[in-house]
Length: 288
Length: 228
Image (cartoon, rainbow over all chains, first blue to last red; front, side, top):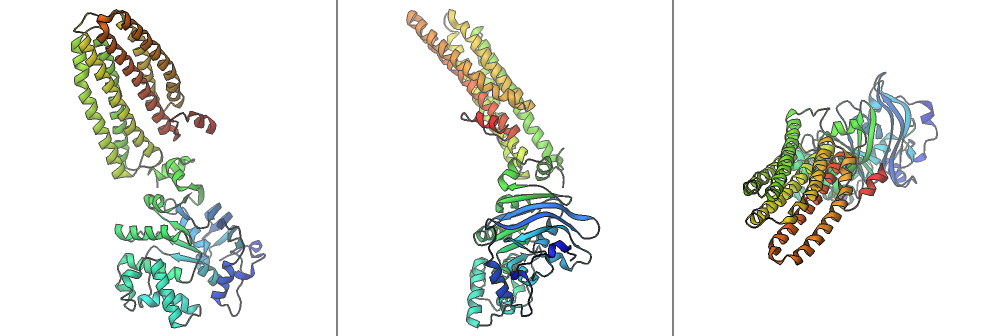
């Protein structure tokens, strides 16, 4: 990731990498950071490009804590790009990078060169469009992140796995088959397993990139119910092409078009009386 | 800008056409019911009574169309308000047509007796109620918020005229004991016209909601002005 110099300025200790980078410790410190509690993520004057052309331009957006924020817009509008910038998933794309602006998480700038991205990604989990459990057991999928964080006590691991599976509303369906292969689960169960895997390492923010687009309506309903339930403990940012899903699960909605944030606000308002004509036209199915 | 889905666009247009047709029919039923009374034409009264059935059917058809649009296209924003407003306006138009039917039934009864000299006094009240209904329908058709709001303001005048006329008919009834039944019919007709005014106000309020998303019902018209 190309990072402009001023963004590397003062980097908080909690996000700075260290030789014995115990991710768990870093994440624990990070969660104790004093930021503006009402905003989990603050994006300011943000430009991002994969090549020369800006994929995101002048985006300023606040993402409130313990709320579900939906990012909507036609394909190529930059919503997934923004999502991936929040936990720096775009770092590995050659030539891609931030051109301007800042992203602060709990008050901490996260774009700095010295930010510990492993700790950051633990703090900000991600769930993808296509469920992607590891080809191991259900138990090991959830335990994986905890093990690499240094947790080895069998009892503690078992407790954490159960807690995560319960939180992901998957415990009752899997408690008798924890050591069976994760790939034997249905698609919807695999996606909820991925959510359980994400929350096992105790993130504070969960990014979801079209988490239901590969699921049938019943599995979708279960994941949507889970999202609504998780809101009390996590800040959730969801990219979706499904307008009805945005209205069902999100508190706030941000509409993007050709790399720009056109309008954002309370979801009910965005879908009943949007202020911008572009928003009205898009949500009403007049272009996209 | 039109919807990408032609069928959605067509369904919304069809819904609007149905509401406008129903508006014309209710207006016409009211007109022929009053004419049947004032001209003592029982055939016209019968016609108003019979045509109320068509309005009832159209109301059910509009509800069905609205339900299908919601089911198939999950409308949002202005589209959602268009569907909700259409269904609620249809309900009010159906009630207006019911009032016309009620007027026609009373007219038919009065036509069997001697003509009541004071009957023509209902005509100015009818004119006022009809203007209000026409304004409300025009406001819906053109998305004219100012005109829609003005229907509520005009209704105060109609209410005052209604009270004054009821008072007059009540005292006239006391002086002409042989025509008590007919005076009672006239008082109920006056009441029907006052209700037409109220339903017109409701239609105007729905037109405002559809156009601006502001809910001005129950005296909340000030909120519209505040936000403007």
